[in-house]
Image (cartoon, rainbow, N blue to C red; front, side, top):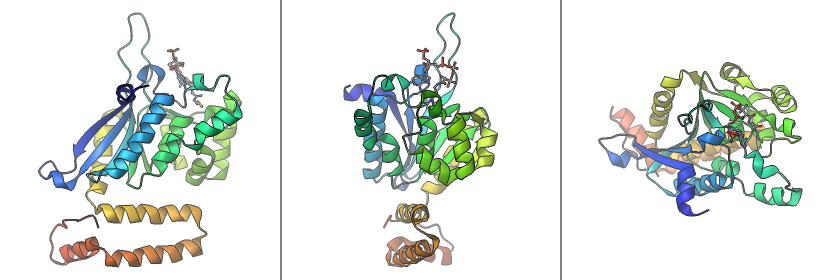
Length: 282
Ligand code: COA
């Protein structure tokens, strides 16, 4: 797989946070582009996601990263159209004949972890199927916004498998032990409203509202100090790994450290002078 092909399976679009001031940075939408296979994650896609995750971290102009799935192509004559998908899972054809050691190696350095490790805010913009590795990709993002026709599930059990892209852990953190096990043990699909009631998605909207709603939230987030956003994400992540007493102590440390940042002084001064802050990102 050469670089050009990898670019084809992961499209990149940039939107400036403030079109009058490019220095305010940009939002990047990364679109998984295999609509004929419901955007299933094959090796080219996972490799492109891993590379892009590194790239967006290094690029200081990027404030927020959005993941999306490509819309279906028009159907071939006489064929039915493919359904809308965020990502319908890992590419199942890649599982045939594979043995444990090979899979262990492939999954040890995986795209879900790469997305999870992006230190900037990430949003999954979901329209359609978010199944298996697709649901896991959405859960590797910080925030999930879905259309009312979206469908979620961890159907690996139907393949004699369990989630391997962090699903058993991230789903449990998001929806709790009982609902997580119900989804993973049954393999059943849930609709967007159920996903919302479970706490799996943050917002549900009509398909024609998805892009605007996502960009509006991304713009709001992206207009904050990039330095403070990074610390905020790190602090909330600590809640996943620490008992609460320890987490609160750690929060005090990172909160206090922010008082040595330039952006804290900029933010506080701007508030007191009734001006908009001009963040420095440090
Ligand atoms: N891996 C590889 N190919 C996939 C895929 C996956 N996870 N999900 C869908 N596809 C492919 C189908 O094989 C089909 O390819 P084809 O047109 O060349 O035959 C194409 O995408 C369209 O899917 P299709 O099954 O025809 O659509 P549908 O509307 O009948 O059903 C789903 C949609 C999502 C219910 C069904 O595709 C499905 O169950 N997919 C697998 C979901 C899954 O188990 N994910 C977890 C994997 S670990």
